[in-house]
Image 1: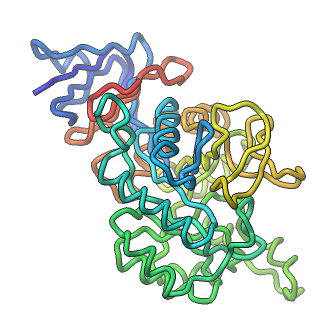
Image 2: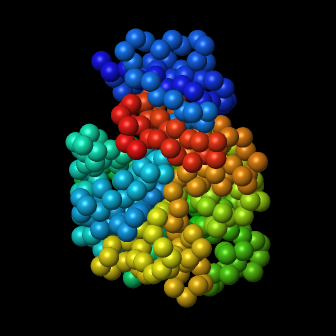
Length: 406
């Protein structure tokens, strides 16, 4: 059985960094982790040196739409391969391909590719070997609140109806998480159907009040999508038509920060949120309940210009400018354009969190949110998804289950 010995750098664990660390991998799993002085390299093992940099876990992205010109909603093998390969270059080794608001047939087609992605483990991207691990789709849209759709196509918004979502949920084995605005008619029935099938229930793109979010907790909601973005707060609620003048009401933002039962995520690209908002989110949630997410669109690694969010047919146009997606009229943001390595570097530079905490937010925390105990950290028995990073936290080499991809 093949053995690989990683050494020559600092190990990044969820709660500490071990200088002069070492990692021994056998059969795609980690069998030993610790100080290089305490772990001998077996005879015949392949040696991999970090050259004074870092040995870290592969990143886990629980909110990603596309990259390198493709979107998961394009619903072709080539598109999925393109996106997965692009994000591997930025250190992502596991992800939940994220849907968009779209007509029934387009969502169903994308979910069918998620079935294939889970079964075929990333479509065998590298010389017939499995590539980036598809954990299942993030069912994201069309059950968003009008006015909170963000950059998604507004015409296809609709409340959940059993006749439709039961068809989607027939692909349960390929759905890792599902998002709903809890104030919509039919949201409770949809939420309970999701939770009954073991799918993680998220709250997002919503104008829900604090009380409505609290009620969704009783349905099984456990996570809030992209904190501060496309969600209600006390000010937004006051601006809605027919809203009472007093008293002020808390919204989804306040509930996400208040309830310890809720995890959440931030887009730490330096464009969506200022450093003070990153610090605020960390203070309330901590690295164990706050994940980094890219929310990345098809413009990853491409020049500034106009692109399509979601499927090429029926999607919504946006502009990549200055490293972020912008609505064509310049009125609002339109998802991210950067990979997870950029999120890690930005969060580390701006949040005041330690390096092990920031990397945890990009690996162990999202893995835990998605209920995956086999990935997300460098620990004995887990999948050997390993990154070699230089001192600037740039991705130099990528390994999945001990096999090198990049």
